[in-house]
Amino acid sequence: MSEQAIPDATTLIGWRKSSHSGNDADSCLEVLDGYPSGVPVRDSKTADGPALVIPSAGWSSFIDTIKNGQTS
Image 1: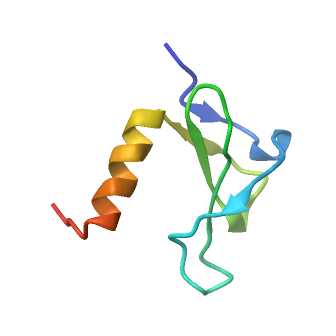
Image 2: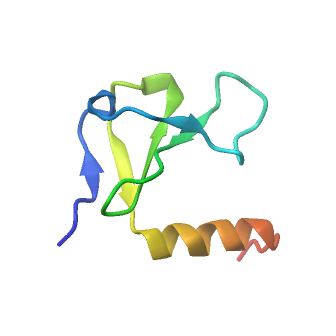
Image 3: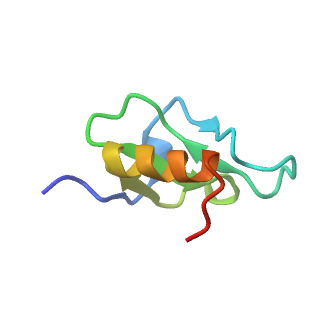
């Protein structure tokens, strides 16, 4: 089973603001590219908090859904 969460997201470097985050600096989703077991995602307000690791296929499906404007 692959890793599903990282308890302290500050242990990783290279976070970037997701292009799907809004312009509000207090509401940013950050992602980390190149992680071997998926795409880590964290809330920028709690950078030292946990990160959720989403499997690459699931992340791709999620992004495709957003790009296509699907809501259900």
